[in-house]
Image (cartoon, helix red, strand yellow):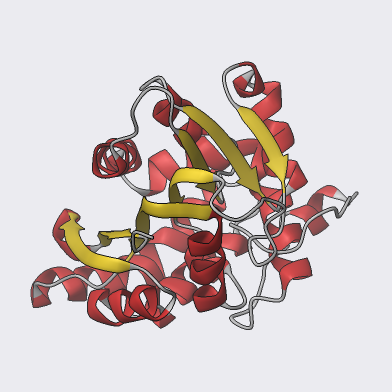
Length: 251
């Protein structure tokens, strides 16, 4: 959930329910859309994923394996729920997102007392080269106007030998599951979102962006082209989600 930042929005309640971005990933539209879902974002994710989102966060933390004293960048951190989990390892963790609405929602929940939170553009991160020992982005790379540029920017701010974990929706590897999942995205998910989300149209975008996203192998190629090495992935929930791991080349 990253892109340009710094927008402030005031909407009529009905207008708020109809904020969504297109697949061109216009940063202003994406920012507005996430501002509009911020209030109920965490609970909506849990409901729409059948509680799997918690397991995906645990798997991401284990794959990144932060240790006490390390500096960890959690990009597209949203309300900071994932960052707080990473910080339990004793690492210093920074939650970065482009949506002020999402960050403010996390602050209202008190997460800023556990981790630092910064609004920033994922394509132009305000950090020096090699600032972090490890970096992660969960369900946010897909929302960048230029995902490959975002991966390269993550490489820039990660030290040589540092680690990357990308957690993102992907392509189910079992045909029957893929068929059921496509039906859920196009029919089931929008109906549930209409009942539980503060901005149901955002979840129409979610379904569209998932279906347009590359599979596991192509994403691995993108990560490699951005300057990362030792790339591997592991499927979660039958490939509905994939964890990609990589390292920065050592100096």
